[in-house]
Image (tube, rainbow, N blue to C red; front, side, top):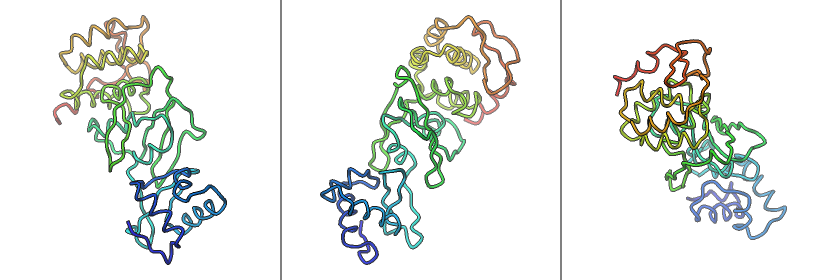
Length: 274
């Protein structure tokens, strides 16, 4: 990556070249200190100048995105949203609708990235380069089922397919509704381990979510006897609506203690599409 020294300045060129040689396109202030050789007022002024001149974008306090020369005169550039998201909070994983989209379990395209963490951020929602990053705080017991993927040489944490489904059933508002979960189960039917799915649901600790999962598995006609047995052992005595985003009125299914509060064709109208 080359830099125009006339507009960037010698110190700025050296700093960005040092960071870029480490393979970093996003960096934190501490990275700049190591590359610059000291932590002082001049470094802070230099970073501020680089932001003003369009060589850096401050994505958050103390976190910067390098804008390469190829960005052109307008200096418009961004990284993959998952890479930016990985810098916003720690620990973290990309989850919910964002993970559904990554795995190809939904066709819905969203300009919102859902990031799960056991920590709470002062601002639960950030907008960076037109993308909204939504933080979802999880209790420690629900922080599991994570894998790593590689995007443009960055290692990114994302929920496993089974944990993604479980999380979506646990907090339906972050996936677009129960219909999207049913669709994800159908689209992912050849990839998903249904026994693992049931075990993750039990471990997650939300009995209502387990009831929804059991009902969906049977309604969609999957042969998953072991998963059904696990889910049946984890039922509540109380009825729960299938879709918490709709009014809790509808047919009561005793086997799963589920209130089917949406038209049944909403769970299967897209089955012939794949």
